[in-house]
Length: 403
Image (cartoon, rainbow, N blue to C red):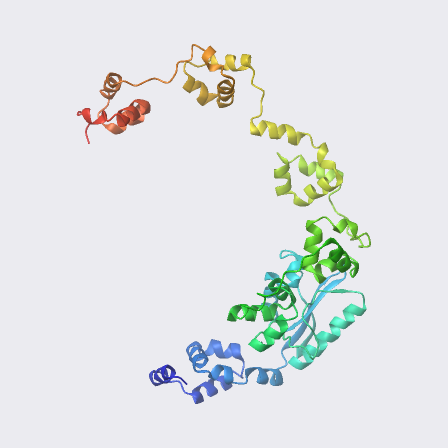
């Protein structure tokens, strides 16, 4: 214990005996201990009592509160098998990140199915490994990345027992941080929280996935889903470079898309443009683009031209519009498209009835300013004259304006 800890101990009433007594009252369960006395928990962490107490050992030997659960994709026969002593918390973690969230997408994750419950930690690890083996033998694709079974270190997301040495050894199995995160979420999170990752992957060169290497990796899998699960980086490279079409042995999904030609056409008619179609009905847009149906939606081109203001302005059309106005300013304000076409083609000089912008003299500004009592009224009613006065410093000579 350091001098600082000794000084703190004198100021507090906590002793090691008090810590042991409270821990026993909580049945040696960490979460209950933290909830019961938060201050004692913080102090015990500072002086080292918390870490030296055999929480994990007592929890493994004395409590049968572990469950075996799974997430199933019945259509494609893909499964994730896990164990935990807090299913609600573990389900939340799966929905936020990890293999389950990546496979099902965050909004389509099914509810976990409990396979076995009321198990000790040792029994749970053994049964988890047996279920993974059973599903694999039945032809199911396995989402689990971490090692399972009685000889594994997995305890359902619990990273309390992961020390620096353990995490470092686990990280050696992976080439990059991303692979480490995907392969062993618990160890990666522990190392990230403790700041251990610095220097672990600094000398590792990122693997470049060529067409040949991606082909070799894809050959090990039967479906796209299996390829994506087994090697995410190779799959991403193949997807980016459009190499997936070359893997002819991939079994296509038996699920029929609801977006046939008629359904895509109906969805497209509810949209103003291709961008609007892609944003509102991304799946329909993708199906229409892949099958070449989108080229038949000619109303997109018409709507696009209409919205973007594309129009062929002729001299006669611009002249007819300009006849409605007395000044160039009014013409430009009301019909900007025609006005800019006239500027581009130098037609404005031929519209001699359109007056150019007025040049404000001191006498004109003074005559107009006489109508108002304040500068604010003058500026609001005659913005052009007011700005000319400000620019030429005439406004101070109009001494009748009240402040």
